[in-house]
Length: 442
Length: 66
Image (tube, rainbow over all chains, first blue to last red; front, side, top):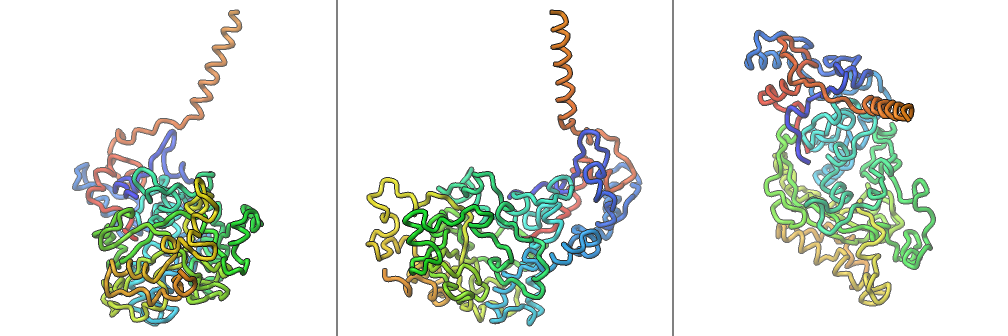
């Protein structure tokens, strides 16, 4: 997403007969600018010269609070106490899943609290875009350098492109919008839910502000957030477990050892990342990643690459499974996995003794995923021109995953990806419990 | 016939007025507002010209992030 020009970010455009901000958002205007942002309400410049006006501006901005909602209790919370109190512990603000994984890979612990230095660096960098009231309801988030969405009018419902996808862009955004004008994965179509006029909030009805339970029971994964959507919510996709032969044979929970998650058949290829590194005080000095690659070519040190890989679900019939955070989806033996951008020296720039994550092997690097690029017809389900219904997936015979080399996560494939990044990485160890080698015969 | 023409013209003007009232008005030409020596938040932040001049000096208000 292209950042706005500096002046655009803070411009409140008046239209028609509007004379001030009170005509745009009369409720919030009663608080007054300095009521939230501090600074000095009125300053007189000595003359019209640029120098004097610049001085006046700097005086007006004395002790300016750019984002008052960083301390919501004294700002938003005055009128919105419940949302404000709960949101401090919500997934969006606390970033529980990321924090859990950093803690596990660094210390083998579920909490970063045992290491205040790492906790502080996590807060300064990783948590800098996760998030404040204002970054969803007023401005674009920090990750795209801010800027008013609609003239500082508070939006009850965040904007999909300017808010949701501004943060969830490299994977969810790339998935959801398909290939368009050089953006996205070549060959991918937009998610069918988008083409039907739906958006993020159509399905994601969970309480983004948190429901008040997170402080006591932090969700250690996005998949553990209360109210996370499923395909059958709202009756959208009810009981279709026997609506066709593929569903009969592969519906999750059929306990026939062939249970597939919906995504295995109905997702398109998706973006994967590798070798991301922290950059220190990201919050203040965010820049494009040097060597960042094009997703369709996958070159460069920091790599993005399209893939589609089926792996054994570590939570299959054992909620929690290998990953304690993975509590749900235990009825699908086979799920899709996406490479997480982590490598052993991801946090080395923090200079905190994490140059080689001691517990790197505690969580797989190919992680459970739910690509947001659903289509009815995909490379698996579209049998047009094939001899029979098995040609796409069972070319080696009915009981063998003949297209295994194409779709399954084999040890050899894991090794080829990790070796291409760093020959010493050896990601087979950390992923061997989910690769197809131990669960099917090639 | 004459009455019919008047009626048609009246209807036409009536709809023009309705359309005009429902259209977003042309933005006020902030650039041409006289520059004031008094700096209030709204004086500057609703004035495109002033922001363009001063934003070159002032860094973006939003900090960076991931």
